[in-house]
Image 1: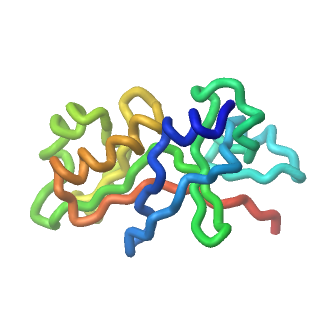
Image 2: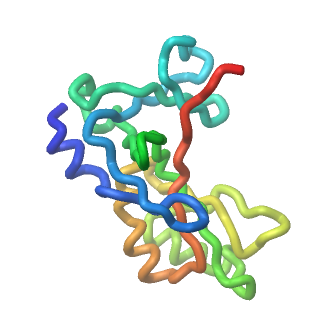
Image 3: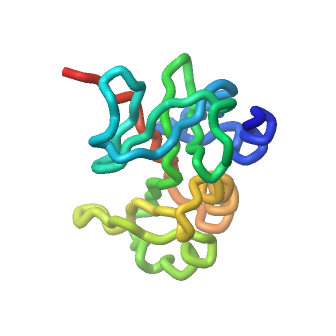
Length: 158
């Protein structure tokens, strides 16, 4: 795949962490999704439950639908899954804005019992690019206290 096509498909940067640090889209790497049990020890991998992501060069991917974006800050890479963490003012329950979230292309996947004003969101259509590209609109329409993209870090062997 051409780097330019990849770069146009995903946002140039995303907010990560409580300080909303912005990680920049890698111009060298992307990731592909695989079964976590199929990952070999020598592969650079990112794990999320049963799903794993293996680091690849952008040029080695034929189709954007196979690619997950890799973002970096100070040579610290991570795979953006398209899932988002949102926190509203403590007086607003996330479920009260569920229809608005749905209209924006997101679904609630988990609300912590101890924090009904917070939730994990996933893209309705499973498209990480659409989810990440929608962050600006989500910030504008919902105006949450905090919003950040899930960024998986490299797996390390113990």
